[in-house]
Length: 152
Image (cartoon, rainbow, N blue to C red; front, side, top):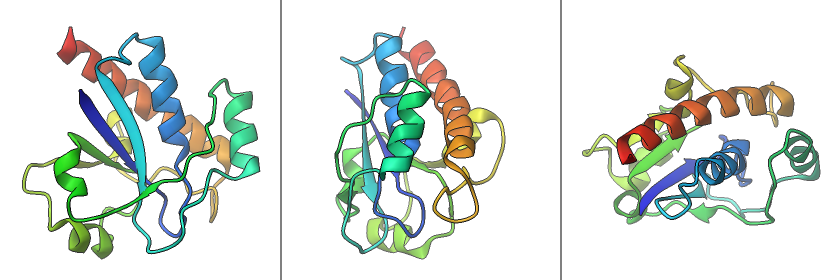
């Protein structure tokens, strides 16, 4: 099983929209038996399910949302996943202090898979859910297409 981990936006304990988008695209590609996606929170805060506004925006875009809470990021997290995807802030010291670095080159910005280098907008700060969903969908499509071609 190839395991993906999506890290929450900086400052939040809610799963990113990308988690739910990736799950739907994995299902659409008939790869549920080969790829698994979860989320973790970087911040030392209480995790919580995606807020109602985010849930409504994702569901309106055709992506089902479950009421799960991101797991806390721990030292062992790095070894438990094949690919760790950041939606923002690749320089977050908590990320590397918690996992001890990226010796196997598993940690990437999600936006790389959409063809740009940068953050997926944070709807809890300066962005919108529509913008976060649009960028996350483009990136997740690129990611799942790449993984699908490797697995076939």
